[in-house]
Length: 217
Ligand SMILES: *Cc1c(COP(=O)(O)O)cnc(C)c1O
Image 1 (cartoon, rainbow, N blue to C red):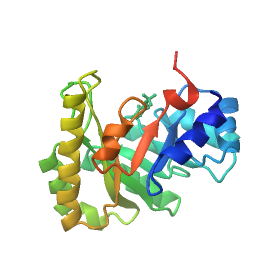
Image 2 (image 1 turned 90 degrees about the horizontal axis):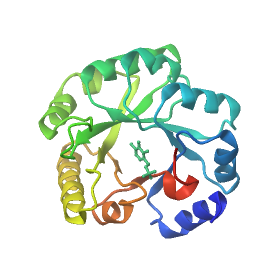
Image 3 (image 1 turned 90 degrees about the vertical axis):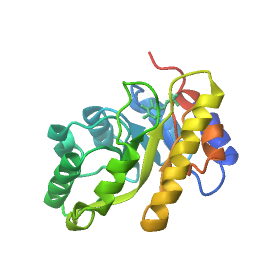
């Protein structure tokens, strides 16, 4: 199927309250434009410089989501335009986002990345760190950031039981923090291979790459 057919497929497949983030990392602007022409306006990238150059070239009504690990010294390259950062995992990073957003007189929306996978390679905070951050002054004294939800990635495995257990774990954490902090309305969870399981566990934002744009090199 073509990129635009894939976009249309997801538009009809996903529940209405679910946001589709089209993960376009490594793909050329021509591919992103096919998705754009099919109505897609939310794109996810994992490298800040690549996202910035696509932002410069492409229509300005696109919402750019940063879904990769963020180094503090690179926040400045996306502060002018990024719409949601999925991967906040420290107070230090949050402070830097606040500082750079202030320069552009913006409020940048952020998700706290929670580590639910077994793999050592996956970034993220544990539940206690996230709760501590939300309870701290930081959450209220940084006027240029808004924490609006949680994000997680399951272990890369064929074992559906394990993936589902990890999604369930994040879903429970989300429900728990949401009772205290109702401003958290986004649960970003699920990729091409596991989004169906994620939707079963209350995800309302899925990040789909390869099954829209094809395999990456
Ligand atoms: C690459 C990536 C995705 C998309 O993965 P696919 O399997 O291609 O759908 C989703 N989330 C994150 C954080 C990614 O880095």
